Length: 128
Image (tube, rainbow, N blue to C red; front, side):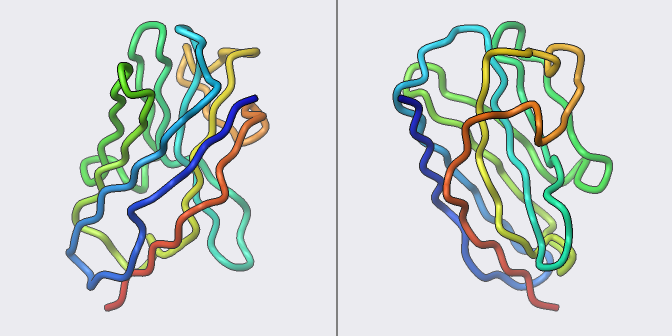
């Protein structure tokens, strides 16, 4: 059974940084998709960044390019999201997600309905 646990959220001022972590257990697929999504109140869940673990192919949302970096420690089965230059509009609940069945992340397709496994989320709040 796949279990994802996020950590690292918090409250920061605009321009600050946070590093999110996602510890994955029960996820042993060498070729799969792992990603970060976020959802602000009253808005739909949107993709932030994802990685195809088979080739390391990464995709980012345009809104965070150049500010956020996704990475993965395969040995520890942990996914990270380094967030720099945070803006108030980055305020949201951030979710870690994983799946290995469709694998369209391999061609940089990023959508919430591609993922079947989700963490509980970690809140990120950026004040101006």
